[in-house]
Image (cartoon, rainbow, N blue to C red; front, side):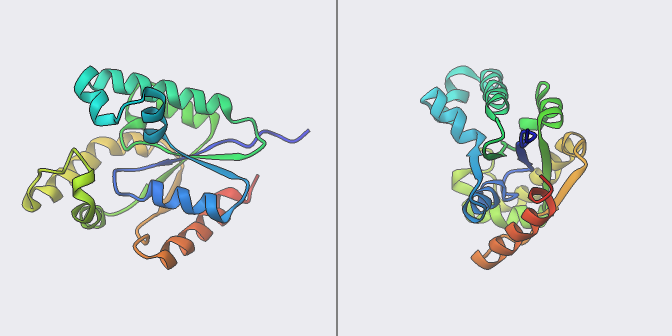
Length: 186
């Protein structure tokens, strides 16, 4: 009997490339289902994340996020590999990191603060936490947030350089590296 395939969790700060890489992995490797945890929470709640925060607060959002993560872990039956792009704060709350370490393969997508700032400047309007930050405050905000989250991200033994995801070619090359590094062993 074949061992169940453990889900792979993509971890990292906002704009680290979790969704971009996850979608490409699902496209390139046919037996992979990709789930963006934030999208999953929104679909399950029939509300956007900003609406959940506004109406119920962060604690309720984190409760829903944790429940969704547990549900996805339970759903991983081995017939298809599951790749889950977690929210930047997912590993930092409750027992989420412990769950990911015990049930799957968490991989920290590492990107320099400078590259994250570069990406955020392009897509700032879609990121409520930084949408109204002036350029001169953005770098300090990112560095501070990364320092706060690093102790949680660093609990995983798996790291991946996600600094080159700016073009289609770079995304494909990164996905190929990721597949050979993390998806061919099982």
